[in-house]
Every structure is written in structure tokens, then in C-alpha cells.
Length: 210
Length: 210
DNA sequence: AAATAAAAAACGATCAGTCAGTCATTTTTA
DNA sequence: TAAAAATGACTGACTGATCGTTTTTTATTT
Image (cartoon, rainbow over all chains, first blue to last red):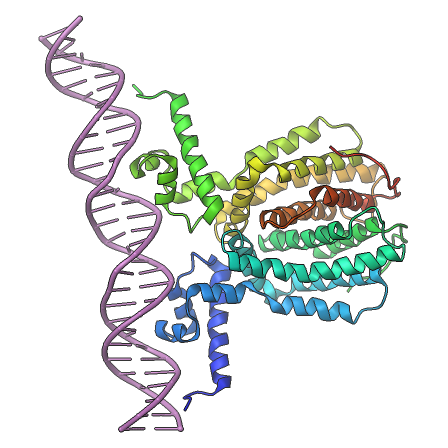
């Protein structure tokens, strides 16, 4: 009955999503026309609307970035038991994600999504929930660190988590604007940030990060 | 010769800018129509175009936020000589700016500007230059701190500055998304961040911020 | 031939921007 | 000073273009 296989169908879907991602990355959601996506995908108007109900549908599909969340989860889940080490590992993962050239378009679309989240309820939910995940993870790590006496108890775990997340959000911005950010040096500074949360100052010349 | 005074002219201009700010804050640059701005300003289409050449003109006029820059400059310029205290003062200024309800629209428009900076060269210049100013200020403070032996020399001054700026950018996002951010607790954590950059750990229970 | 995927054409709606004209005020003329 | 002419401030109906979407037509597969 079906003219093309499910595999082919999924492939076509990805084809459209990739075209939309590239267009949205270049010109944002509202300055990208369906005609742009159609042209870039190599399909036709009608075909695109066979796979997505509307333009907003495409926006919502791309505002979410499950890849990143999963990467974060996996990397830290299999980490050692030391919460401080866990935080540093998290920094490493984000640094890698931040500098991956293949992820440039996703980061740019992410920023457009941050702005869109201000006026689109569904996009906001997606964005906020996408951030809640790593935040909860950081909170858990910090609370364990505080319980173990490794991290200052006078600082709220939630506050610490928000600070770390804010740092990564800010670096996405600065990087995508084309500023020449020395990511390695900055991540060393972020390691210093984590030191600031600790009760005792570790040896300054320490750890070599990947 | 002129039918209205320069004062009146400037007042009309502000009237339009305020209407545009409110509209852009609500719906972003590209989802706001000139009709929206016209209606909100209480003027007519033609009148608006007497004061601004185009919609892009309005966008560029609002992407810039000189108020904030000046506030930062003034507050720290008159600060004490201690660079560490200077950094903490900077945090205080930003915390205040972040929680000022009157600045909500400007912060939201700022976020829209961050996204717009990805595709509009002129907006990007405005945004990046607006950030270069406080960054240079932080770099100067940090370098003085490093020279005085107060701040770790193994961390780049530029890296530290970028981390601090990233923190504020991230908090603007989290705040504007409507998340219930405990700004006071977070700023205490940011003070901890600054501690992390220092060579010696100051007394944990310290300073009461304004 | 029946069914479905894709292409092409076309839809109404909305967009930023324009322009001929109105009204009020100022300047000139008498 | 009073009427007339001129100019600036402003209006809002209108334009061509472009928008996202739908409908119709063509092509392909079972």
C-alpha cells in the first residue's frame, strides 16, 4: 500500500529538517520563508507539507535539541563517584559540544529559539525543559558535594547550577557571534569557578582537561 | 521655520521608540508589524516614517542600549581602588539592573537583538561593541588584581572576563523566560565565582551586598 | 487501474513602505 | 493689522511584493 518505505519516509523527513535547520540557522525563524526551505530541501511546497503540518511545526521540531541532553546524561551518568569530578566532566562535555564545528547550525538555531521562547509558549516549554534536565543533574551533584563537605553549604545548590548553566549559555552567544573566544582558556577559568564553590582550594596547577 | 520645537520633535521620537520597544519586547522584531508600532504610538504610518527611515532603522536604534553601558562605567569608575571590590561592585550593578522591573522590556528586546545579531551585521556590531565595553573594564580590573597578586595568574584575564559576562547573559535569559530565579542567592554564588579566581580564599561569611 | 507521492499553480492574507491630500501654523503681502 | 500664500506636520487609503498554506495536476509505484 505505501509507495515508499518507512525508512525512505524518515529519510525525507530528515532531509526537510536539515534544510530547515540550515535556513533557520542563517536567517532565523521568521526571516526564513517556506520557499527557502523548499528550495534547500530539493522538494516542492506540497511535498514539505506532506511531512509537516505547518512552519510552526518545523520550528518546534527544531527548537528541541535532544542530542545534547542525551550526551550530557550519558557522559555524567557513567562518571566516577566524586561530585567535583562530575562537575568538571560536565564542563568538558559542554566545551566539546561548544567547539564542534558540525554543531554550529544547531547552536545558532538554539539562540533563535531562546528569543522565540519569549513569545511562543510551546517553544518556551521546550527550551526551559531542555535546560531543566542538566540543571537537575548539576543540583544533584552539588548537593552530594555539599553533603560530603566538599562544596560550600552557604551557597544554594540551585544557585550554583544556574550560574554554571548561565556560563554555557553566554559562551554559546559569544561563540556564535564570531568572537575569537579562547575556549580552552575559558574552560580553565570555569574550572576555577568550580574551585570557588569548594570549601577547600585545590592545587592550582591540576588536572589537564580533554 | 520649524513648526515644532526640537524638544517636541525629540519627544515624538521617543514616543515612537517607546512604542517600538514595547512591541518588539512582546513579539520580536520580525513578528512585529509597522502597523503595531503605529497603533501603539498613537500616530500614523506616515508620521512614523517622518522620524525613522525604515523598520530596520528602528531595530538598530533599539538594539543598542547605551543606558546600561553608562551605568556600568559610572558605578565602577567611582569605585575604590581594590580590584576585587570592583568586581563585586560590578556584580551588584548587574544584579540591580537584572531585577529592575522597568527594564524588563529592554532585557527582552536585548535577547531578540542577540538572535538578530546572528544575521544582521550592523546589529551584531552594536551588540558586540556593547559587550566589549564592560569586558575591557573587567579585564583591566582582573589584570590589576593579578599584578597585585590577588588573582590567580594561571587564568587569562580575558577568559575570566568572558566567564563573568557569560554569567550575566545567561541570567538575563533565565530571568526573561519567567523562571523563578533567586537572584540574591545566585549573586552570592557569583561572589563565590570571584572567590574562585582569587589566590587566597577569603572568609566565607563576608560582605553584605546591596 | 488504483493509490499515493511529488510538483505546480494558485489562494487569500499580510507585509513594509508610499503618496496625494488635509489641517494648522507661520510668513508674506497689502 | 488683516487677508493671502506658503510650508511643515500629519493622515490613511493604497501598492506591489511576499507570506504560509491549499488545491489541482502530474508522475510513479503496486
